[in-house]
Image (cartoon, rainbow, N blue to C red; front, side):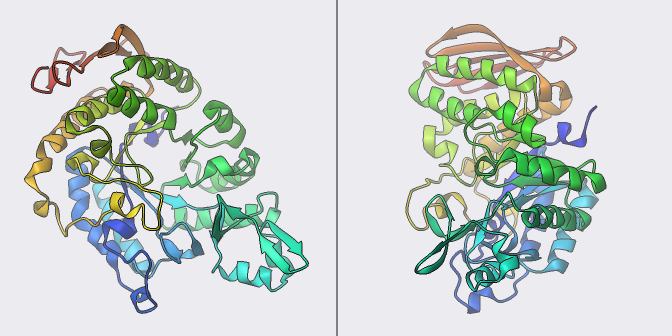
Length: 414
């Protein structure tokens, strides 16, 4: 049965960065500032891009970057309050834009009041966390070595009830979907307990998990999630273009076909956790990455700025994410004209995808393969076919031929 999510193309925004909020704020910088309002001038831009979904990074009260939540029920004051959230939801609804929220349910910031209470030996609060009792007192299990993040106890009924309640709360407020942060670190059985409780009230809600490695189809089946992040395809796209080895991409697209038989993955070539695609492989090859993203099956997500060929490198240091999570200007008219070619390419390919909605669940068939040239057909369930030719020499280029015979050429030599 078709769902609204099948026709959704997400524009993914990291709100703290997008709005210029301080990431490591002083106490004074935590004052209520309705920065979420800065997103409204960009909603028409989202529509003009061809998207119809706004995927928001963390917006709940946190200590720094948003992934160290201290209150799941309040908007971070650096972004605003309930009223600011309501204004954004209303503005999205007027335009037919669905909103996805980022749920950080693997861990919380160590400043969370319930965690502080757990350290103070409050029994009810201790049920929520993975704690260790030592001679020196109570300590906690962290998330991937970050001592400022306290892991939740996903075997606890109390955590199941907490997460289900948080999800329902914000779905009642107008959200339509949840990104489940670090879902790869959470037992799939936890989601299998939580999601049915939420679906009882919100059967049309969509749940997408951040999963980097593992058996994606099995994780979806065991968890009850609708989708997961297709990191395998992301890696194969940039790596095959960078190394000029289309054999890697071909292998991964065969794997992608198998996944599409089980569920519809969230596909992407950029997000808030990785180096920008244009920085990784350059503008010409990044254009081919966009061709791949928008001509294969999946639910595409476009990370804000990638459609303008933004640069940004992720590094492993304090503040190493800041460069890939930049502030946007106050309105689209202030963007540099240098990004126009990439924007037009996104618009053309998304328009192609809108005219051929069967692409969401389509699979690929290889027609030609060597290191520097690759051709495939994307085949729909009704036998529809879209042809794609990629080449890396003499310069990167592509030819996309739609079922109606329309041809899109990418690159000077295409």
